[in-house]
Length: 288
Ligand SMILES: Nc1ncnc2c1ncn2[C@@H]1O[C@H](COP(=O)(O)OP(=O)(O)OP(=O)(O)O)[C@@H](O)[C@H]1O
Image (cartoon, rainbow, N blue to C red; front, top):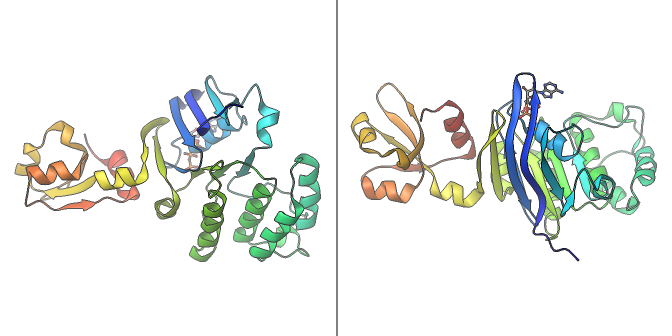
């Protein structure tokens, strides 16, 4: 039996569209982990996720799920993946029971009891057609369906976007429950960085089709920091000390690589903890 520690492995993925390119995208999703995939609108998140799912043809690169090549062993892999994309993929006139019958034909591991449990947990009615569902209800339905064919990997594209904090928390709890099994893994793209702050173990940051950052979340957040200082102190910094800076009227805000070494250099300096959102903004808007 092959023992693979990564649920998903992406190596040198390239895909060119007119005016956009994924450039040598490489990262892993380790088993037992949630990887948050972040980046601004149009950065290439959905394109990457679609390439993982073979929904678009890639130009080059290899992608493995549970050690299996996603092109050569596509059929075998599909059973192992639960997918939720923004918007609802089920036909509007279907009811929850119709979806169960349909999914049972598609997936050999379809677990109707589990699906019914999720419907109950999410308080989804079985007598209404999907067209009468709210956005949050549609999202929860998709998540219930994605989890009920007993996948090992969840691939989620903006699965919590446009939902209120109560529903988001319910959904995040379900993801946390799913990941308790060490063989499971989640790759989730989201603009709601506070959600990723809560649940992600790793963060992968994509910008203009390139991976800029790929690190364990807590290590990254405890290492990086934001230093506020005047021009004189800024000039004393080495290039290696910081990642990006932003200049205001009278001061500099600097995303530093290593809070501790900066505190040694400037004992009186205040270096604040950076949030995921701030780090993203520095990478996109800051100067080098
Ligand atoms: N089928 C396609 N043909 C041509 N260009 C495409 C196609 N699909 C996506 N693109 C382009 O690829 C780029 C990346 O799009 P993508 O949907 O991957 O971004 P994203 O990071 O998911 O953005 P968002 O956060 O807005 O969903 C965009 O410039 C988009 O216009």
